[in-house]
Image (cartoon, rainbow, N blue to C red; front, side, top):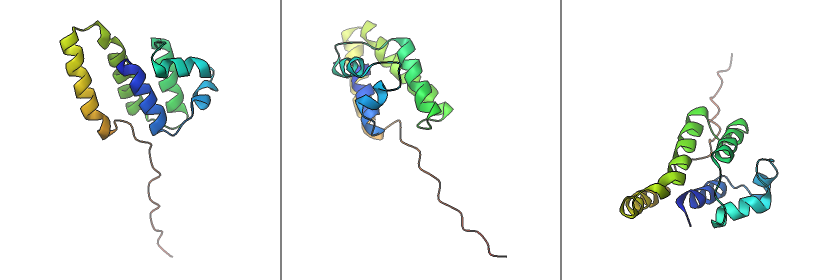
Length: 117
């Protein structure tokens, strides 16, 4: 499986989204998303852009997080054009970063206590 496919699955699971929820957005069908996750289909650049835009619009990502996520996904997608050694090195680097979770769902900030008048 290619790294971009693996990362998309990790992303979906970290956001606790179902494959159906992504398919319901209209930029990819549920069966199309399943094929992307299992590596039998590669996502287009446009699909990755639409996915990141949707995640931003629905509050899963800030603008800065969205920009980083799109850059990461496109980098992973085009990594296949690298030499096998560099691809293996980059894959090991990505696997080492995965536990750090580049994307975390934003939590609501704690409510600040109000002063009584």
